[in-house]
Image (cartoon, rainbow, N blue to C red; front, side, top):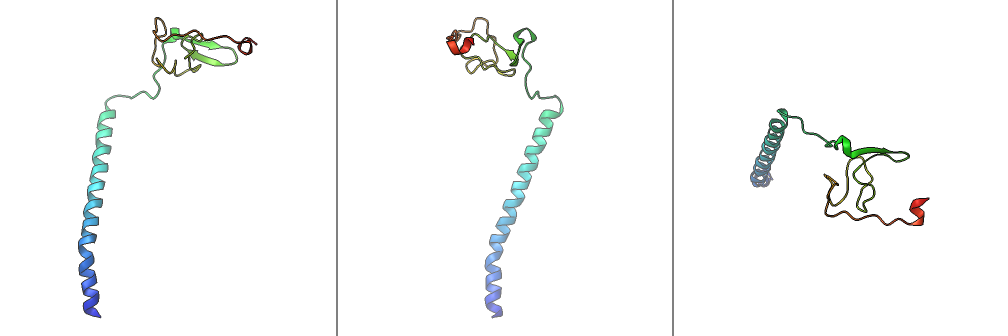
Amino acid sequence: MLKTLLVLVIGCLPSLFSLWIIRKAQWRTRMRIRQAANTFTSGRRVPQHPRPLEHDRYYLEGVGYLIGDISCQYNARSGYVRCAVNPSGPCEGCRFYEAKEVSCRDSV
């Protein structure tokens, strides 16, 4: 009985050692990534949302602040993104501009 138990323990040791080495390597990798991220962002502030240019931003009653040309079909009607085609702008001279079709429902 003792010999059987000893064989099982000795048989499991390589697997346990391998698992320990893998966990240690994963921990080291996480620490290196964390350190690299801290080093990268410590010297400067990374903006979460780039602010639109003030001349391109306007307030529409009942909707809120919008940026871009609202008459364009691709305009997102958002204060953060202009459109799907040219999100960073500018709208002036955009080659993707398409006038929005006005229906009776839009004019009411």
